View 1: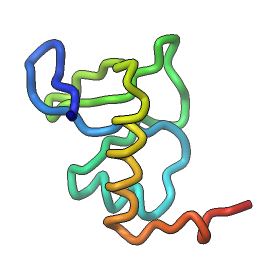
View 2 (view 1 turned 90 degrees about the vertical axis):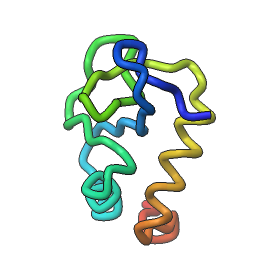
View 3 (view 1 turned 30 degrees about the vertical axis):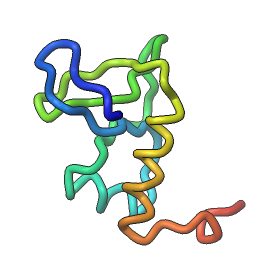
View 4 (view 1 turned 45 degrees about the vertical axis):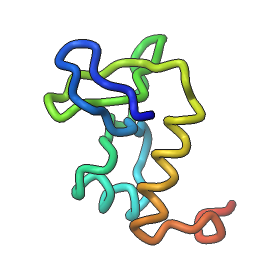
Length: 84
């Protein structure tokens, strides 16, 4: 289940911090995830954002990870392309 915003109750999308891969930029343009910038805010780090740009932290990291990976895969991401 995708968490809803505690302020406006809209459905959220995964929020990603750091330098985004091209697939993340494409997913953000499609509204499937949100880009939070390169710097992490203070704890707890928000991991969801709604269309009104409210940000919040949800402790269910598994749902966040699943939704984030699905958005990236839908735009061509493969872990093989990004291994160090």
